[in-house]
Amino acid sequence: MDTRLIELLVCPVCKGPLQRGDQGQSLVCPADRLAFPIRDGIPVMLENEALSLDTADNTPAVALPPAPSGQTD
Image (cartoon, rainbow, N blue to C red):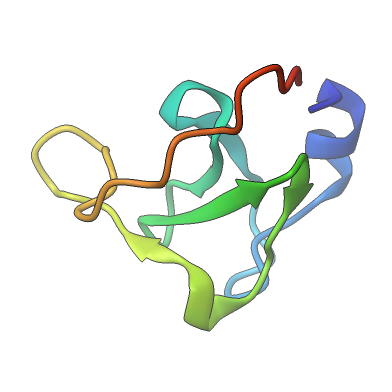
């Protein structure tokens, strides 16, 4: 995913900045501790699709599905 696009997107919950997370498979809001999945190269910015982050290591409490093979960011 293009870094410029990440800079334009904000968390739909708090409107705060997002960071690339989970090996490029999600966008993370550190303020709300939510990970928004990226599916087929498209960020899913819906609160009900977000995964809560594990407090210990900032990884999703539930594993994200693997990216399809051959997909590039």
